[in-house]
Image (cartoon, rainbow, N blue to C red):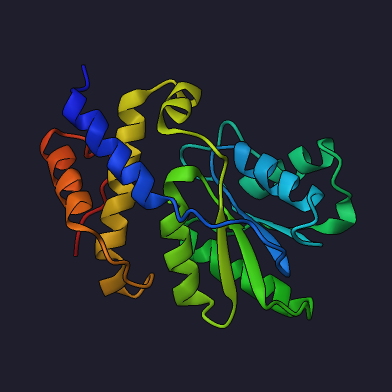
Length: 217
């Protein structure tokens, strides 16, 4: 049973992890691979609204996606976008990336190899990873403007979609930990963490929502 305090703390992390950017036209849309096909849906919707002329889907497979997406996350995203009406000519696939840093790095390289000029990126991720994706892109692709986007869902709606409330809280804690430790490792820019957010993170760790933490070095 998850306590009322834990839900309140999770809501605080959820609100902080989202960048609350207003979508605007960009050079390219980049959909970050994951288990969540909603990323492809959101990227497609933004493309159809005229927010960018080209999509890059990036992602290989992971232990959580190898069974559901055996052809690779980016390829399954591409197939989803095609089903929703995006022309094949508007989609590039980057099939090697296995983490957020590689998503950004390999997408950038792919576009540079195609001589596609990029001044801004609309970066689409899962809702609880917007800030992590943004901070990573600012570090690894500093010359472009980054606009963050995700499925417009509340925490409650996201929990209902995943059907595992404890896993969602674990993932929120994991995302917050990475914001704290990855800047020192050179993986992302440092984000100012308000004290109430830091306190919520510590309480959730103390309550055992730690399955998605990585070893701190």
